[in-house]
Image (cartoon, rainbow, N blue to C red):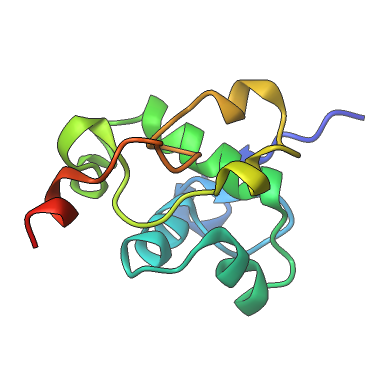
Length: 115
């Protein structure tokens, strides 16, 4: 059975895209990330989440960039921490290659450099 990790149903969550088997929307996950929560911390607070589900939510946001534009910063990076290289190692390959969106980029954050 293939799981569709991000679902859109007009009868669930008022049509807002949400993560499989949770009551958390893609926007909720992006807000948590922007507030500084890492994927591991998100799972700690919401044990129903799965790493691949969080990664797919980040990928969904990247594909729907206009809808989630306020969560993207310079260089088309999502605000806040993504998966570390070690955490990303267990994700499917198509998610590991999304540097700055799913996986923390190897490049330094240009905003952080000037703080």
